[in-house]
Length: 298
Length: 298
Image (cartoon, chains in turn purple, cyan):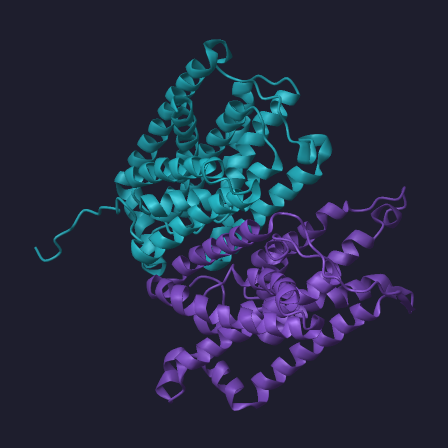
């Protein structure tokens, strides 16, 4: 059980960061950005690139990478999504699928299909209440939770946060009250790029870097954003941890023992499927999510 | 050269059938199906699994089409509950779920190894003869599906579907059965995609999880968008153009001498750039949908 909780805190933080990025962009731009998960891939490869070009140590490289991906997100928004959104949200969503495939293709072209790892020193795991965790994994959780908490505080208590919430609630009204809607939207896209890239960096530190690392998280991220209710940051965070917890639990539980027969575990290959099934169940039962308001069609 | 063109022709016809199915859903009805590959995969795997157990191929083909129609029914019921963006996410999740099942149920699908026992057609005709016969077969099926699609949306049913696309609340307000229309269009189009998948399994003599990757969905979407959403003739043109382009890019590797992995990335990039370019600069496609004008003033 301690192992399950440890894994939940680690991968939950990563999923939560991307899901929050997706949900705030949905708030201001009103479409589900499939390419959101590619910000994580870009962030991870960015660290790799910064490591070979700048070589300022993992922290500096990460900050550089996150900053560049944040800027890139704004560029994508301005050059691509503004135009697509002029037609409708559906076009923007198709475009985001295309963008995510293109990003994957470019990375594949430049670096090849082999998974890569950051060159970090090996660490000895420590036993914390029965779970084996490395100091690095503790850092991942601390950074993830700190950033998510900071984001919640910014949204709640600063004037920028108020503007973002206003634009998400009613774009036209926000504009009419003198909020610079374009600037707020740019900032939100930048934040979502940074959050995605941070998740990618954490993933890279945690395991390895591959072209599919982002796309493989698409469904858990969608599920978290949906369960949280698209547009709700706190909801997305809570949902991300909950989903990852259930996913981990599902592969750890011995179903055979529960019904009193021989040991029977879920095949680990099906772990992502748990998220999909939950996603589809949520869509059927409560499409507006736990914290959201409307999603059913009128 | 001839063999290359014949191969492109057969694949373009087979994918063209799927594109017609997607066009009925997305182009005519406005249903954003990001999991169209699921129907294709159901047909292909029905044929593959049937051949493993010595079932006659027409029977497997039929079973595949029936299962796809059932899946279409399920997708359609789901569509009655959800707004378009949420439905798009659900279809993507369902398709990925199917791919995971194909990858992990070794006993049923031979997992990642795939199934290569589907009976090859026209094997006594020599290489070019086989391809010619295949082109004739797939072309005929494509033409039949195009005819069925055209007949289906020519009259009242097509007008209902387009009204659902343009303004769903209006269609509901005018007492059209919106859910019923969506279910019917899915049940009509899903077996087409399954038939294409089944033929594909016979043509390639192989079906594996890779054939269910989101990339296939993306390729079909590109065909539909390039050809023209809602236009059957356009979608067929789009299928041939995109498949030709995708086929030709295979030779970039031979001509320029860049590495195989780079060229694999480049091939995907070309298709992605194509989709993005059309979405941005010619969203109506090469042959835009033509709607009969109704003179409302008289």
